[in-house]
Image (cartoon, rainbow, N blue to C red; front, side, top):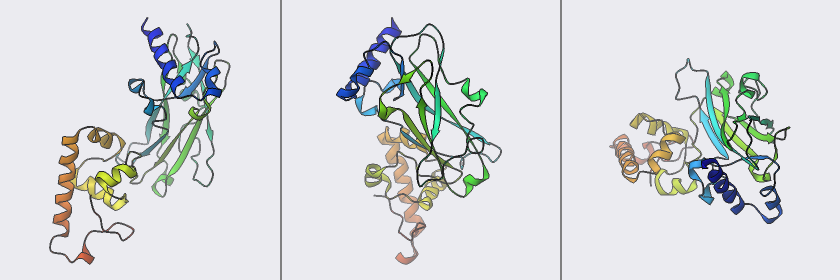
Length: 258
């Protein structure tokens, strides 16, 4: 009964966000697959395209750690199956970007160890897709992008066109978390820079990565605690100095918190 109820909720959720021309994808016995939000966020319609882009960095991890894993949620539509159903994903090249190389920057999707994890278990309609990143030395110089896309196979046709892809940008450098967007820059953190990011990490001894920032943005008390610490530390950093000597970022701009 739980599975049936969940399937109904999931289909209803996707139907709310699908244009008229795609509705035939939802009401059919053909099994289809597409990316989507964490099931815990359903039926929040605003979350349908959440997590399309994730940023990840090895910079916080000890030097002896050479792999890291990013997860994306994937969902099926159509009838449930009483058997496990494998699905396939492929890399898509991004124009004018440093594209990740299979076997060098990430474990190839057709690697038997990885492919074995790309399965929708019997009686279920959802799983998390692991993308295993590799800590190549080239990540110390610049960020690489890995765009992945669902691929049709014997078990699944494709779902809604704009929900067939996900992207991760990763490096071994200080990187702007995707949640540090324009809105939160204006409200709390100010303009992003690597120098400011490193200052925040050094002062608070926290990562200020996607996970940490998502957590504190949901807790007003914690958010203002950390912001207060940062503002006080910046005042101390600049105390007694002329404005021209106040702490600046890599672009020569003054570091400020709104």
